[in-house]
Length: 129
Image (cartoon, rainbow, N blue to C red; front, side):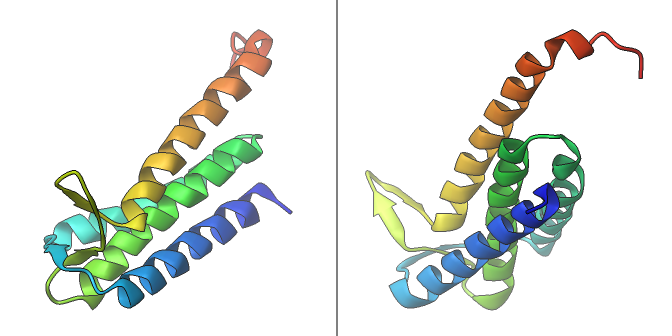
């Protein structure tokens, strides 16, 4: 499987899982998002899905796909639910959803994968571009 397909599959999986969970969970809490923020989430997701797979690392592609899926899920939820993005997960006075978890986990994997890729290829970092 190519890195781009891996990223797209991860994004689609996160998007579907979050929307299904939000619909089934019946969230008591919602947070409204301006349309500009939802549009920015789509732009950032597209950038992640376009740029990250260019790095020769499956971890970077997977992390980008997971984070992009979370961003797309937030945008889709914002457009689907009139009350705002649903937050069915609560704990300790904090309300959030699977998209929030995916964004954090995807970013963590993306950065860790980029650092690992840079470490393995550190001898090439000084080569002229």
